[in-house]
Structure formats: structure tokens, C-alpha cells
Length: 108
Image 1 (cartoon, helix red, strand yellow):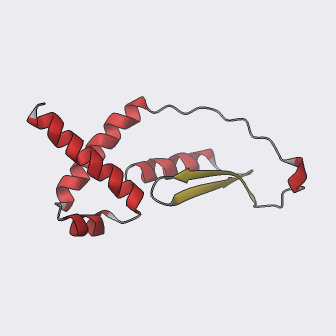
Image 2 (cartoon, rainbow, N blue to C red):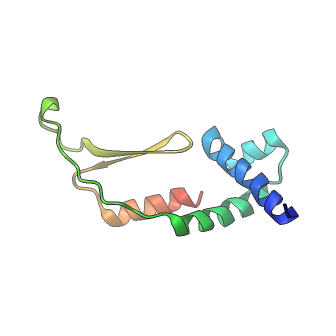
């Protein structure tokens, strides 16, 4: 195993743990005695590598009749992300706004 692959695996583990922890980067780094700048570098680098393999898949939405009619503004789609985050989208959502939001969350 090369030093580079060992280093990448080390940071992959920390990036994954950060996402699952619910902590912000600064607090995670304090608790684990890591360089904030190094973690930020690896988070961005690994996000770019993984985003190349990410594909979006259309998901058909069906209204559950047993729940009754939806009220205006009620979420019709809920996306749960690692790190205790979720995004709820209603019928009249802006695709551009959702795209910007997902991009922002992906790069945090």
C-alpha cells in the first residue's frame, strides 16, 4: 500500500465520520485534533471524486390515497441526507433553487 492511498483512506474515513457526526468542520477538527484546512481540502477533493460517479435517477411520485388530500405547502418529497439533514420539496418547488441547494449541501 502506498503512502498516498493510505493517506486518502485516512481522510475518507474522517470525511465520512464528519458527515455522520452532525458536527461542523471546526468542531469535528477540534474533537479529533485535525487540521481544519487539511480536512476541508480532502472533503472537497473526495466530493469531486465521488460526484463524478453520482447519477440522478427520476423517481415517480404517487399520492397515498389513505392519507387524504394534501394541503397547500405540504411536502410531497423528503430527501434525508447524511449528517441529520433533510430537504422537503412541495408541489410548486423551483428546480433551479433545489439544484443550487443540493450543490451547496454537497460542497459544505
